[in-house]
Length: 119
Image (cartoon, rainbow, N blue to C red; front, side):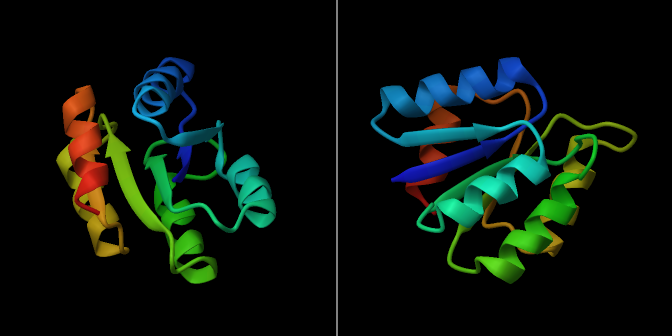
């Protein structure tokens, strides 16, 4: 299964990539929405996108809306550690715009894998 992970934090990208690769997933990463959409235009067969909510340039809510509009078959998992609002508030907003699942940072490897298995 192809998974695209979008996050501006390199440590988070590495953490998620290592977990998923170890479990046999094909993992690709992008540090912002622009790069993610460039990649998606060339790889429309991606099954899941995992995206942070709070990022510079383009926030995760915009990314979720665009993916749902242009690639409705893709499952989306939102992740957030909070910001000006609590992470729960950001994740509730993500559910309102159509994510399939959400995880509050920090999360563990089992929580991530279980979330993907139940999509």
